Length: 139
Image (cartoon, rainbow, N blue to C red):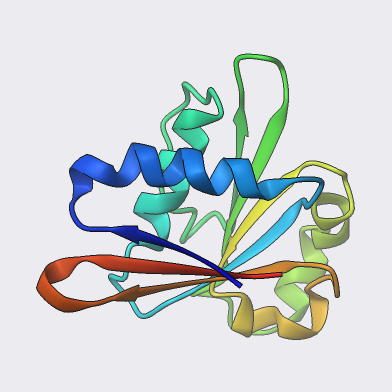
């Protein structure tokens, strides 16, 4: 288990760089945290550090956003918060994304827990004192 602390938004780029250094060969990351914990904000910072120039926002209604990096790689960003039934994930072909070999960042994975690959890395974001955030990576 690894931890990253963010005391203010000024530190988010550094935290994103630390997270990227921990990615290794892993491709699917599932982000847990309460509403407003900072999941999307952190994913945005990670994507920016990876060279994404696209607008990075929560795919709450689209379910998945695809981003391109400067070096031609793709990153998939999911938000399953508004999914009503598991069949919706089947309908858009979740497996094509999760097993693509490309980075996948998944918000609200508990909504589709049975579809998450066994080797997905769990990332927990929690607000701690004074608005700081603690990011725990469980591999």
